[in-house]
Image (tube, rainbow, N blue to C red):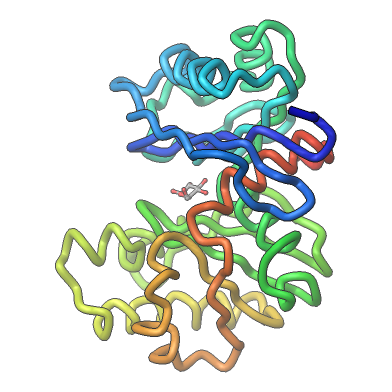
Amino acid sequence: MSNESIGLGIDIGGSGVKGALVNLDTGEFVGDRIKIATPKPSTPEAVADVVADIVHQKEWNGPVGICMPSVIKNQTALSAANIDKSWIGVNVHDLFTKRLEGRKVAVLNDADSAGLAEVAYGHENARQGSVIFLTFGTGIGSAFFMNGTLFPNTELGHMLVGKQEAEHQASSAVKENEELGFKKWAKRVDTVLAEYEKLFSPSCFIVGGGISREHEKWVPRLTVETPVYPAELRNRAGIVGAAMAVDGDVTP
Ligand code: BGC
C-alpha cells in the first residue's frame, strides 16, 4: 500500500478505542474500522497497548494520529474526561512514541480533531467565518474555527449554563440516561446554544457526534438565531482528523 495519501487515525474514547486507515485526499476510510473496548482502568499504559494493537492489526508502518477527550497542550494532557485521571500531566507524545517504537505521532483533543475533519471534508460553511463546532456524545466537545483555522482546546462542554455544566444537561448521554425525548432534549441544547451565541456570536454552529445522524429530529426545533448545521462526517470525524493532524502537523 502506498503511504502517499493514507494516514492512520485513532480515536480514544471512554468506551472504545477506534482506529482506521484514512484516505487523506477524500477523508474516507480505507478498509474496516477497528474498535477495541477501552481497558479498565483506562491508564495511559493500558490504552497505549490498545493503540499499539490497532497499529499492529492494520500492519501500518507510517505515522499515527491520535485524539482523546483531554486538553492537549504542548503534547501534554491537562485534563481527562471519561478516562483514567492518571492521564493528567502525561506527555502523550512521548508515551505513544515510545510505545510505537519511535515512529512519528501527533496527539490532539477529540473535538478539535473532529472539527478539523469537518472543515477539510464536510460542510462548506465549516470553512468560512467564526464557526463553533460541537460534538454531542458522552460529553459535549467543542472546537473553534476562524476561516478554517483552529483555536485549540476550547472546553465549552464544561461551561456553566444556569447552575450546571453544559454537558451535564445537554449531552446525548444525558438524553439517554434521563430518557428524554428529542423535544425535551432539544430544548436543553437550545438553552446551551443560546448561551454560547450570547458570548461568542459565531457565524454558525456545526453539530456533530452520533446523534447528528438523527439531526432532523432535533435541529429544526432549535430557536437560536445563529444557523445550526448538522456535521457531515459524524462518528468518522475524530479518526479522520487525527490522521490529518499527524500528516499536516496541526497539533496544538
Ligand atoms: C472533554 C473534552 C472532550 C469532550 C468530548 C469533554 O468532557 O472535557 O475534552 O472534547 O468531552 O469527548
